[in-house]
Image (tube, rainbow, N blue to C red):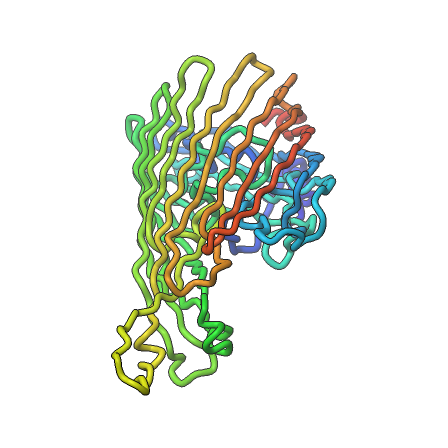
Length: 439
């Protein structure tokens, strides 16, 4: 998107056209994410549009992160702490101790709002510079949000409805707690709000993470050619209650997790499993503290999690060996192995403490744990743990700086563990076009 063209269009009073690429990366998490769907303005009396009811804002921030890692993680992800990227083999990525300087969290966005045909609308397009997927490790633009809302209808890419963005604590580390749902998906959503209650349903893009496990040892070609088969969109539902003391939210997920094989007759072996999940959480204000507590559980939900796990993995049936010699031939591979939607549990417990209007602290712990199948590799991810605390200073709403201590640990399927300890200094300055032209 050409932001300069958009700004020029606004200043000249013409109608800008906003375009953006679609597609989301699973578990690509921002720092201190604000809810993407704030309540729209109330409809004007009489159902018509009001004069001067449109607004346009260009906003963002420049953020510098200085990180001293006392251990070592996958270098493509060294600017964030992801437990799944911590090695469990000493020296896998080199010697311990790395100094990392990054501006990847810097952000740029455009949003517009007002009334169209008597209903409130909102449009938002936003990028940061934290490369993921094929751009992992690079400082490159990455789409976060690209959606439009009109009345109760939302379409585009934004936070999944299965996610509760208000569980994200006031931390400056980029990736955040692994035990919470956090993914942005292209979707179409319908929302109803009344008297503090919000109910919504959405169809979201499917994204399956398949672990071939120890099939690699039996048939490497088969393991290489296994692919996700995403025939149906995922269904997400949410009910939420907001009050002055905080909020409570329950979200649900139902999905078909499919797979097939490239280069074989009829793409066999193939199949699918039913995936489901429930996510319950809330924020609770008490004095200077805001508690953020959440728990999520389900089968085949790892691609919705902030970090760690897999949706589908092989499970081996155990056949008793008859006491004869020579032993009979083994059953065919398709009778021994079956696909299983992997169970997963995630927990997040943080508290934000607002000591003064300028000084704050966030402290807490989070983990993701999967119930591995009996045919996954010994090195497969089993559990990721994360803890942090900080002291942040905001002398002005547009300025934030402070220091944060972070710890993470990965446990493999065979019990091997790796840990990472790091300290981070952050300096962030925000801006908004509202500071210039007021709307």
